[in-house]
Amino acid sequence: MGLLLKVILPLMGLGLAVYFYSAPENFNEEMLRGKRVIVTGASSGIGEQMAYHLARMGAHVLVTARTEAKLQKVVERCRELGAASARFVSGSMEDTAFAEEVVKEAENTWGGLDMLILNHIGHSYFNYFDGDVDHIRKLLETNFLSYVAMTVTALPMLKESEGNIVVVSSVAGKAPGPFAAPYSATKFALDGFFSSLRHEFIIENVNVSITLCILGYIDTDNAMQAVSHAIKVAPSPKEECALEIIRSGALRQHELHYPPGIVNGMLLLRGLAPGFLDTLIRSNIVRFGQPVPQAAPGTSAQPPSVRER
Image (cartoon, rainbow, N blue to C red; front, side, top):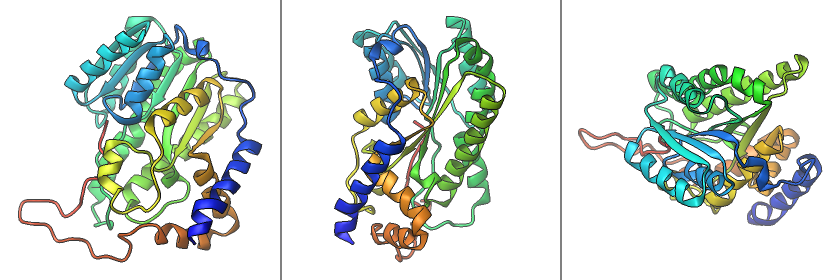
């Protein structure tokens, strides 16, 4: 099992990545110079790193997340790195009205939009599903419906610029494992909606690309805090992941799989041997089979997994 995970699966995945997902052209950072880009969930993690990459490339950057103080620091750093302009809007994506407000801010400031990068996520947990339907409903508002609301509001500008929609998702939305049922459900929703919307764009000759980013385990602070004790595989670097997301969006790829070896290997097994893949996933989660820890009075029994960035 260890040899399969460390050697064979990554090699299979890399082969598939080369065959199916080779970019049709070389990426050039000049592609982003002067482009008007929204990055959500940008106060930390992958979103923060994407903002910095875009700044180095000379893009106009609008970042958003909950925490104003963190966003101020991100914007200051973007300006130091050479962004054409950098600004922020703080607020919660639990409210779709705020999601629409962010896009309106870009329209009022720039008069248009070239790339919409949807990256934010709401608070969830890594544990057995406890039957809390309200939690799933709330998570869908943040992880899915706000993505749709921003896309709908931004679409007239993106049609005019023939721009890009980049949706940051997860391998949990393609090959789900245990302890992440609410989170996984929202990621499957993203795949279904945006993959279907891409078909409609093609039928209607709408020249707006949709890139769905299927990510594995990345070394963001939130992910490390939530699952580093439970997952045996090593995380991939957020800086490289962020650059690959930007690159795939600029090249108008349908999907990005990162890290390619692991993610493509998992998706291959999902089609060829789904039962074996399920066993492999469970065998690499240390918490599997353990009871839910009892909470102390006034605390939650569920450890934090991911929070809106």
